[in-house]
Amino acid sequence: MKILFDQNISFRISKQLQDLYPGCCHVSDCGMKDKEDSEIWKYAKDNNFAIVSFDSDFYEISLINGHPPKIIWVRTGNLSTNDLAKLLENKSSEIIAFLTNVDEIGIACLELEALNI
Image (tube, rainbow, N blue to C red):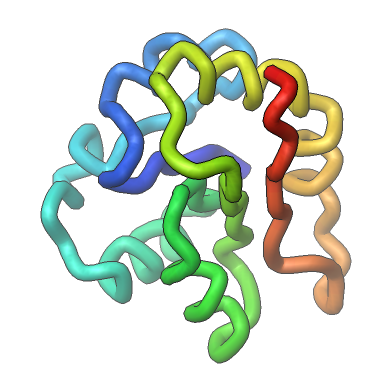
């Protein structure tokens, strides 16, 4: 499963994390810039992406639709691109375990709240 970064995250993040999360991309890289959340959701589902976002919107959609796609909800408030990259690097074991768990009734959303980047 690959990672798709939401519009509320800088497009620069995917380049910084490409080695750790191969195939990750930003919505703008996929022609999804300024699309509705429902369109981004469908794109992620159809293309085997998990969505990373600062917003609760995708979490709320997952409560109705389940998964895929899986959601990584960054609940730290807005971070700089570098701080977000550090957080995603520090939490990589947890994130990879979450993304690779294919249990159909498994967890649809991983919440990242750690502030000590």
